[in-house]
Image 1 (cartoon, rainbow, N blue to C red):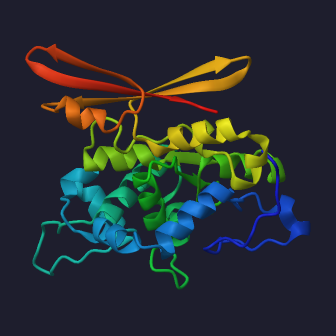
Image 2: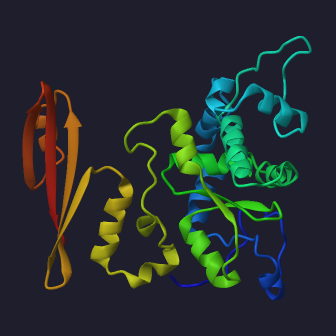
Image 3: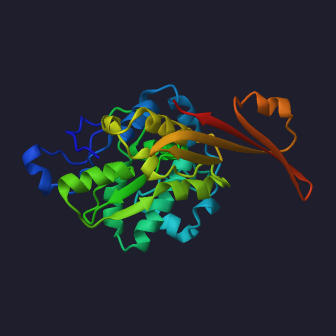
Length: 293
């Protein structure tokens, strides 16, 4: 990956850093172009309203936290969680997705020995808005729904930020390797929402970690393969090579339930369609074989 001078990120880190101070601030995350592109679309794009509804719908109970009530009460007393219960109410109110995710993050940090004082610093870093419509943590959750691998990165001093694998690689190259806690936010979000299958499964870093500035390293066929892989529309991809170059991409989709062959044919220019019945369940497997010129 080509190391570039990072542009000013869409949100401000909890630390400011001048070029000559780069080795003295290991908590600063240098974000990749892929991360910045996703971020700009999520924060300022048309998807923001949909994301806000997902984040703020208070439909979860305290049971979704997998945390004892006495612990929740203690954390609320330390202002790690807003407590909107009435004076005479002992029951916890409904919680939003953002609040549930944050409580799960606290739980992981405590399991790794981070003090509640340092957790408070993490909260300040992740809950900051700085004039943006979403907090840093809310942005991270939204990026998870777009299948971008997202991590919460926490240092021993409580400084925290979010990053994708490419951003972590860039940061390591510029700042060197430093001890940190890295929490995979994708797994937390999937557990809470209860999604089975690959709907929220992160796309492998090898397919997302290539920045726009590095695309000159790929030929046109490799760029097309990358685009097909990133689409997330296929269950299987097979790549055929000829004389060391990509010759054909086989895109396969599996659909369960009744589906007419005519519908499947509309998606295929050259390929094959198979119908499989297993234990009374019907599957249509269609493969579009695309030869690259």
